[in-house]
Image (cartoon, rainbow, N blue to C red; front, side):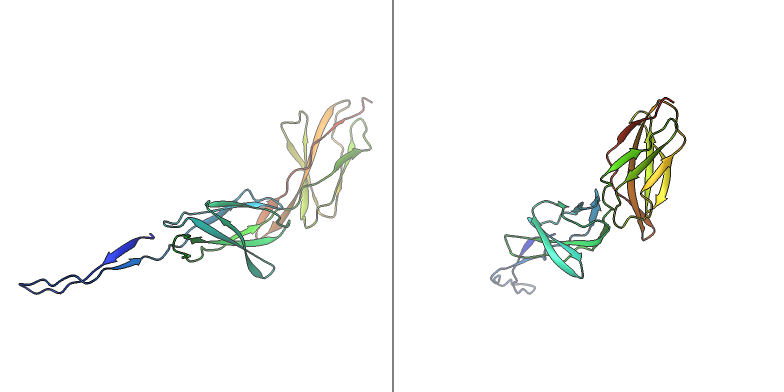
Length: 212
């Protein structure tokens, strides 16, 4: 912890104690941020949060991308919403504590790695609507590995009906019933570092098949 101590010394033997020296004040070094984590990772934003350091009243947050570190925030909180990121990109973040009273800074925290998700599928449309089939088409998402297509009959309970690779931006659903309402939504995902990163779903669309 960041604590100030006062020291003074005096000489002594078995029978006499000398006078104390003048006192000296020393402050322990400002501590290191021991933990830093991320959550709410999106295509262009992430929330970074970290452990509190005793004696600190400010924290300096740094981001690494494109080969260099840059300070992006100075905050009194122990969390920060980072915005204006790029989709499908790897970033690193670190933070250090600062005391405005003494001007001291602590050591850097460990780095936390963040991989942003693919962008949201912006448009989704249905065409060639027939009694038992229809064709879905959606906008391409840069950097996506594949797309997942979800269907619902009430707009609330969803089921994934198909995954298609990134070269495909359409799908023909042939297992429908006549004159019935269906809802669809699509999202992109990307696989990297043995993990899967999902983009936000498109807006849902409602389609009614023909009665005959």
